[in-house]
Image 1 (tube, rainbow, N blue to C red):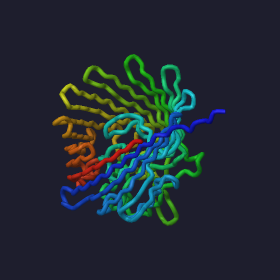
Image 2 (image 1 turned 180 degrees about the vertical axis):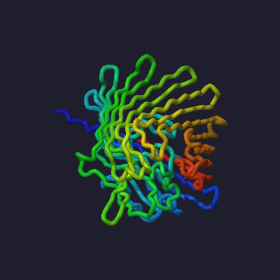
Image 3 (image 1 turned 180 degrees about the horizontal axis):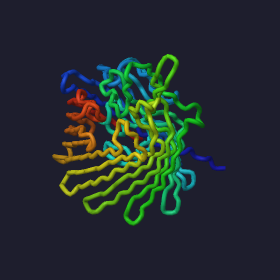
Image 4 (image 1 turned 30 degrees about the vertical axis):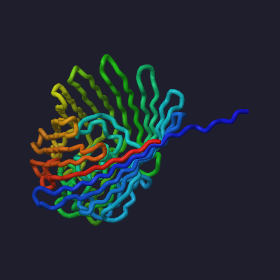
Length: 424
């Protein structure tokens, strides 16, 4: 009898070391001086199955983005970082196996699932929670918090059906207190008339109660890339309910369920691409200042969409414009946000000198409130594995606005990145 040969294995590994330093515009003080090491390893076999692992170690000498030791109440017990000190932590970012069983593709483990492609604005990209320790400036790949997930993709005729099960009740990491990007806007945080006790958010208990599930059907129809999306999930921001007690009112936030029905579309017309996302969310909660509303929050369904146009007609240049709108189906006369919120973005990206230099600028503007932010970065690819960049990130407008509240956190920075990779 012939011996059965062992499956052949291929391995890949890589590392990225990044140094970031940024000083605030007004105080001239360092806001961050951070070193990050990302380690990536993968093993694949000739059977088609592979294993991927991504780990991150991070240290910030200034300790202003996330002061002290975070309690990580937003994370499930099996998705927490290892807090090494007040200024350092380590995290298993991703860890999954993937491969095919018949025609179905499976990915099981800690991973990111990306729905939608909007720049800086989220309509459908809500499968994974986000970290807001630096608000919205880092790349979404770095801000997205990977979740333990079972993902299956099955061909259905000319379309592909993606099914998700997420038994990982981990939510947005929102900085509070004296963090540089602490959220204080009345759009998201109630303002009691006197100091009150603040309790940790109430979380769902158990896998059955805390799991999310979703499905996405994607197809190419008449020249258009189209998806239909559905997600049954806990919204990743807790509702800041005010609760009466014998000792007086307390802030008692808790996570609430929502259903998201959505769709995406995109098509290229020469050098121009038209794309968009539409989402309808049930049972969203918003803040009201009505003296007759005891818990100071009310529920409403929300209809939101974003339409974007990308153009590459100019050599080595990308121009991208987006329009975003959110409409509430229920209106409270005392609510802190507007019934219709409108935002717009503009991205300009250009490369020079055989793409060794790259300039990217992003402008986000609230058309409803008049506040916004500008991010610009000039990078130089000094060699195949070394790059250097300088950046400016500035907010403006109403201090009670979503962007304007961070005017004092406007900053300029320098970054350095070294990368290494190996295959065998």
